[in-house]
Image 1 (spheres, rainbow, N blue to C red):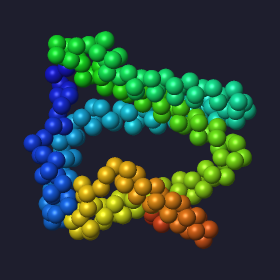
Image 2 (cartoon, one colour):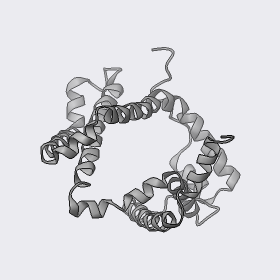
Image 3 (cartoon, rainbow, N blue to C red):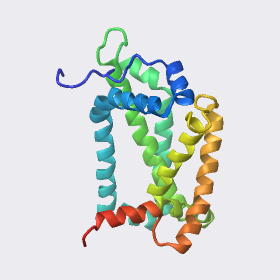
Image 4 (cartoon, one colour):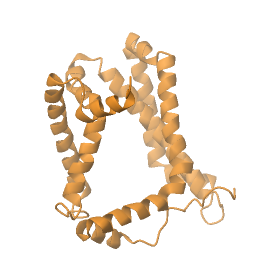
Length: 230
């Protein structure tokens, strides 16, 4: 459709070596300039592609609450345990055979909708896997052994905004030039380790904070701004 942005509108002339060099060794203003460039490069595709996904997640959460699905799952855990297993199996199968499935539906060289079909299968896969993860966590949270393991996550959830922004501060300090300048220096598995370590630390800090305060610091500010003048 002519009024929609090109499916590849996020493509820019910036190369990955240039990105790594700027983030790891550039000045703050150079990094800010690159971030703004990335924002405008991805803006159209984000509005068309990601905004509906984000809004749909809110609607699905509302429907989940309205139809009391949590209560239904709690009333028959063994019955609903089958559902995430089936969803997960389908999701993994779609993930493993995405190329074959899309290839049977469209030829990448002749079909102009190949990318759209590929992303459609990709997103359907995400739906199956995403729902399986959510349901599995809900079910496991009702089993005593896993309840003790998952229980501490509630502290992080009550301080979600504070922890989210704190992760940004921690990792930009590690990666960007105005900190340690390590952007592009780590292997993916190392980043996973860093993420897990930081998250575990945040669990402990959140628990200690909430033993003394009702809200997280940024949650308190957000609440004050929300009810300003009331």
